[in-house]
Amino acid sequence: MKKIKSIVLTSALLTANVLNAQNPVVQTCFTSDPAPMVHGDRLYVYTGHDEDNADFFWMQEWRVYSTDDMVNYTDHGSPLALETFSWADDRAWAAQTIYRNGKFYWYICAHSKLTNGMAIGVAVSDNPVRGFKDALGKPLFDNGSWDNIDPTVFIDDDNQAWLFWGNPQVYYLKLNEDMVSYSGELGLVEMDEKSFGAPVMRKREEGKTYKDCYVEGPWLTKRNGKYQLLYASGGVPEHISYSVSDKLPGNWSYAGEIMPLCETGSFTNHCGVTDYKGHSYFFYHTGKLPKGGGFGRSIAVEEFKYNPDGSFPTIMPTNEGVKPLKNFNPYTKVQAETMAFSFGVKTEQNQKRGVYVSEIHNGDYTKLQSVDFGDVSPKTFSASTASALRGGKIEVHLDSIKGTTIAELEILGTGAWETFKTFSTATKTNVTGVHDVYFVFTGRKGPRLFNFDFWEMKR
Ligand code: FUB
Image (cartoon, rainbow, N blue to C red; front, side):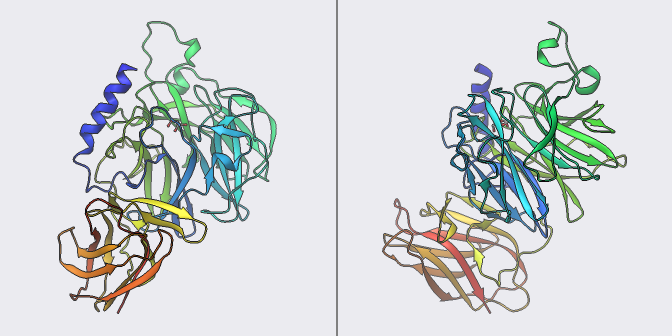
């Protein structure tokens, strides 16, 4: 416990110098246990949500973000929460989503009221960011064990889908093609020094030093015909390691560390990997957001290149994160919750509007990266906002919060925090080419100013 406390304190010190970095990916709330999924042109990241000021993993919902350039992410809010599952009442822990036959399957773990252990559930939708329902009305797997956490799902080249999970050992099931039922018995992955660096905890020899050990958070994938099982390892604090196998459920061999133990402010780590638009990305979490720590984690991402034989290089956490894959087009209606970085604000959602930026106070800002204005400058800027009080102002700056001001939009009160109206203004300065854009919010010092739903620029 002492160790956990000192890591939490270190995190507070670490946070001071990361305000303008690309990592953590999300600044509006704490996000954990990232699970990337590529579908169509977009990369989706499914996450957990650590509560503010938490003293344990008291998590109640899962969230989803998406991007098509790897730096500007749209917040899709929380389409899945404990209350989606009538049998669950606590611990909305790590999860993963996969697409098959026109539907998205979101495998979760949560505390089961039925057995008082952790159980694996599955939600289904025909949309990656909304409409998820409990596929079964009961857990997919629930035997009363606390080991049932962190499901990872993988569809092999022969179309067999596998579900692996577990702490402190790995279990598996073969899913049927419907993705919501399984065939055969529960399997257990045998662990020894050769396969995972150490045997399962109860079989370890006292006083013996092992090269590594499996803890939790498995991520199953395949590269160059070899299965790779990535996992959080080493105990508390955790690093990320992996084992490889040439078949499933596996004849695993320990393959080494991927992300070594680093001072990230979080005593857990949890990874997911994916290729996207010809690049390879490693998602993980840290405690680096201000006020973050072991129970206030935030997702981060690094780009990496596989070694020629398909093995992983060492990947270190950075504050810089990744480079944009393309420029951002400002000449469409853009949701205010699409951003590369923010300071001070949060997001909320309702049935009618979906997700919007909230908790806007004087001096807060959001940023979009690599916005391409083209050769012809925008002539107008408009924004849809709501304020039960007096509103405030949106200043649009280029390249920094104090950079050239291209527009200043007065926002008036609309009578209620969810009554949105659109305000417009002419731009003040011509702008062409590629710039970072900062929306800086100003107004009375102290109270909330307004909520911000979307904006548009027109030429
Ligand atoms: O987020 C709660 C738990 O912390 C996850 O299930 C583990 O993988 C660890 O990240």
